[in-house]
Length: 459
Image (cartoon, rainbow, N blue to C red; front, side, top):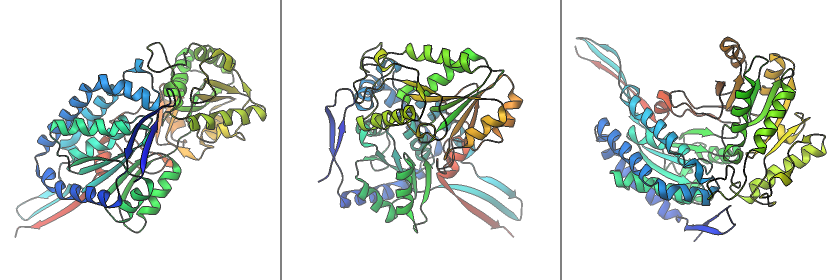
């Protein structure tokens, strides 16, 4: 039997281990979900909403247990209190809009015809969730999928094994039947086999580009719906008219929060040449104000990266960039907790170019390259010079300029004077190697349901 192990980045210890389901047991889980889905969908929408939101209440009640578990599993400092604010915001919004988003669209209702478009649950939705925000990313799909009447099978990342268990515990305590929402532990081969066997009607995956390609291959020819949020290399642009202090605070937090392990974190910054030196000076001071250390201590602002191998990737990118002429502005000795392993000092690089991996490849760590630009046109060209397209952040006092620039960017979301934020009222989507998906907003419900047309002739 395959073991799935979770090694804690806090101290390198084995924190949790679970047996992966056998292929037969995994198939049975999918079959049970399919059998239970119809009865769940038959419940009144208001009832499903009430149960799911009670599940969010139950999840919040587990906070004293979950917050330190997150620190042990993936390194986020306990001072930030988990992900509950965002979980509540997203779940509550999706519950609020459900009646309208799932309502019939009546084309005609006369004495001769009733013509309408109805939305029905996809059936069984398979959610493959990542470790970096294990609750936030999961609820993006789990909550609207359940509200829409789907059964849900959740497979969490091995680095956050306990997150899936806690989410299932909360939902079951609130009244969601165990067969309707299942947390499963699977290896890659069994996961791909289930998808290929059409065990699911829709697959939502958040993770690497390679993982997305593997799922697409597994689903090929099955006509199973898929939604992806894959890699990112999100840029920030500081225009000449920007509020400099606000831009520094916002972009550096966007680059360094969660040790840089954010799907829409800032990985490259372009600053108008008139503000470049001042921005860099303030950014260095901002980073020097951080404290790298044990995430279980309240004064720690940056914990370890989730795994030693993730930190090794970032170190290699920094080393390659410096060898190619970049300047590292942070002395690693200023962060004595940097142990050469999972604990990684934050870094700012200047004199960088797009020939360097650190400016082209996703690093998912606490490093950011900063480049001067002469105008909007150069900033747009550099922001688009990337294989990914999740979000882009523009810092300016001119909303018209931000909209004009945004229209020329190859990205899923354009943000002005903020970054690293997901608005549940807007569609969470991407382009290029970030993949194709539509989560949250009314469009998120459209992805998790299918349309049925009714043409009823009365006479």
